[in-house]
Amino acid sequence: MAAALMAAAVALAAVAASVAAQAEVIAINDQFPGPLLNVTTNENVRVNVQNNLDEPLLITWDGIQMRMNSWQDGVPGTNCPIPPGWNWTYQFQLKDQIGSFFYFPSLGLQRAAGGYGPITINNRAIVPVPFDHPDGDITLFIGDWYTRSHVELRNMLNDGKDIGVPDAILINGRAPYRYNTTLVPEGLQYEIVGVEPGKTYRFRVHNVGISTSLNLRIQNHNMRLVEAEGTYTNQQNYTNLDIHVGQSYSFLVTMDQNASTDYYIVASPRMNTSAGAARPNPQGSFHYASTNITQTFVLKNEAPLRINGKSRKTINRISYSPPETPLRLADLYNLTGVYKTDFPSVPNNEPARIASSALNASYKGFLEIVFQNNETDVQTYHLDGYSFFVVGMDYGEWTPDKRSGYNKWDAISRSTTQVFPGGWTAVLVSLDNVGIWNLRAEKLDNWYRGQEVYVKVPDPLGYNITEMIMPDNALYCGLLKERQQPQTHQSNRKSSQAAAPWSARLLVTAMLIIAAVFFS
Ligand SMILES: *[C@@H]1O[C@H](CO)[C@@H](O)[C@H](O)[C@H]1NC(C)=O
Ligand SMILES: *[C@@H]1O[C@H](CO)[C@@H](O)[C@H](O)[C@H]1NC(C)=O
Ligand SMILES: *[C@@H]1O[C@H](CO)[C@@H](O)[C@H](O)[C@H]1NC(C)=O
Ligand SMILES: *[C@@H]1O[C@H](CO)[C@@H](O)[C@H](O)[C@H]1NC(C)=O
Ligand SMILES: *[C@@H]1O[C@H](CO)[C@@H](O)[C@H](O)[C@H]1NC(C)=O
Ligand SMILES: *[C@@H]1O[C@H](CO)[C@@H](O)[C@H](O)[C@H]1NC(C)=O
Ligand SMILES: *[C@@H]1O[C@H](CO)[C@@H](O)[C@H](O)[C@H]1NC(C)=O
Ligand SMILES: *[C@@H]1O[C@H](CO)[C@@H](O)[C@H](O)[C@H]1NC(C)=O
Ligand SMILES: *[C@@H]1O[C@H](CO)[C@@H](O)[C@H](O)[C@H]1NC(C)=O
Ligand SMILES: *[C@@H]1O[C@H](CO)[C@@H](O)[C@H](O)[C@H]1NC(C)=O
Ligand SMILES: *[C@H]1O[C@H](CO)[C@@H](O)[C@H](O)[C@H]1NC(C)=O
Image (cartoon, rainbow, N blue to C red; front, side):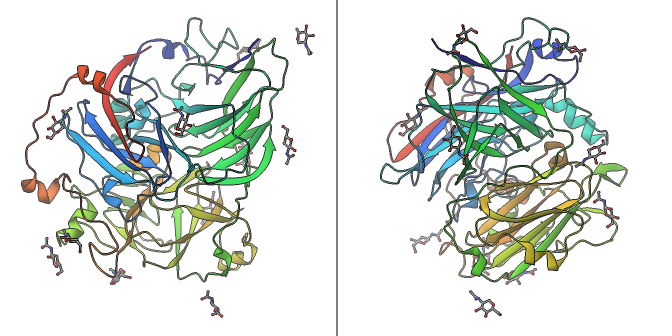
């Protein structure tokens, strides 16, 4: 007999009813969540993205490092948006990475409508994994959900309004199980995960929501944490774990309970979190503690500030505004005036302003970033192009003497970290990846309102030596739009039949067709 795990995402108020109504979501190859990109370390990946939305699109690869190749990062600082009806082929190598990641649309709050899917990078067969091969692999996307469309949410933010509280928590795009007949209306489709007694499964869990930290548990089952965003951890057991927006974890779960009943998988909102979250430890590799810090950025976020009558989010009083010309392209074409590398590296009390400003970092340096959260809710920050060592976290104001309390031995290396309310988080980054890299708030509404900055890591040797050259198919826009050749395209939903997933081992090829579909 096989027990089932039922996703009992907790409904947030009695509004789950609206989830039952058909919602327009961004689907990939007609799927929501999108298809798995199942790849192996060092493989070359080619993904053709066909944009069948009626708005511009970029897909970004959360946690994939794009070594020396920010051209493929899929954020507006490095790539021109793929116009509606056009397709664009991403091509990159998965250098030395393993683990559980995800892709998502990076523009205009589109992730609030879906458009995300899993990326699994497997070890090469000869590389040992620090646990027995699990009997199965299960991906869970958890996240809050608004019944308003991403366009409505975007308009609210543009008008300076708050988007309010979410309407539901979804697991794998599905509504909650009817755990309470008052809270959850009947007839909703919920997620069921079929499992067999005695077997051990690897659960890869991603919080792809907009703004809510979630607590995950599997009724009566132990969750053994084994991976956080590409790093194997010291294996610790949890009955539940907080997963903040944008974070990814893998757990091993053994089906050791009575198989004659089903068990809930519960993702419930954490409105008020404590620092008692996971402090996982990696299998140590890089000796970060013996390296001297060469540069420090202290980045402080504050409650939304009004700038030009609009409610904006800031870091060090700058609310980022993406220029129409990607920063990386502006540099390549020697265009001045597109952005400045004058982002303040420490907090200040200047009047808040909207600007296209980047942080200047030096290649081969060893960077300390301190995130200071001056707000009353948890923040999460993600850095593209790197993983960083999370060496310290505490309440109160960071001061240089806090360095003496850093974890110098076994800090976790990951790409997304939480920063607790009124607290700080310190991370160390070895700047070994040339390019222009997005450092962003993972909470979508904050990100959209300017809580991000690009970190420029220039190559002192120049273009085409350490850094890869611009790909032939790069799109042009903004000040460079005259260079863009028109694209002939066949935009049709039928082409999703052609979505051949994987072919050769070394060159993994995928086609992602992004479209808005009605999903019930
Ligand atoms: C992913 O690829 C690995 C290695 O090739 C394979 O063992 C595994 O079965 C694949 N998983 C899925 C879900 O296709
Ligand atoms: C269902 O939720 C309602 C509203 O929160 C609550 O009053 C009720 O006790 C719950 N029912 C059960 C069986 O938990
Ligand atoms: C975690 O639980 C498993 C059984 O599920 C046990 O074998 C293991 O020793 C536990 N690990 C720790 C660190 O407690
Ligand atoms: C499993 O649960 C069923 C129903 O509650 C019960 O009859 C059975 O004895 C239980 N089995 C074990 C091994 O506990
Ligand atoms: C770090 O700085 C200390 C003191 O300035 C110096 O003695 C040490 O050699 C440096 N370490 C490295 C790895 O450069
Ligand atoms: C930009 O400037 C560099 C250095 O002066 C020069 O080598 C390069 O050709 C220029 N690029 C363009 C596109 O003009
Ligand atoms: C940025 O850093 C590079 C290399 O470290 C340096 O050459 C350049 O002058 C810096 N630019 C600014 C504006 O600080
Ligand atoms: C925000 O910063 C001010 C000034 O440093 C400080 O007084 C206040 O306690 C901070 N609030 C939080 C929540 O961090
Ligand atoms: C890049 O370098 C390679 C090898 O030196 C050379 O063949 C190629 O023409 C260069 N490409 C560009 C765009 O500079
Ligand atoms: C993608 O664009 C290329 C180049 O413009 C074109 O040849 C191809 O037909 C397009 N593919 C689809 C599916 O539209
Ligand atoms: C959570 O919120 C409650 C009241 O809303 C407050 O008393 C408490 O200090 C908060 N805890 C944290 C860790 O922010």
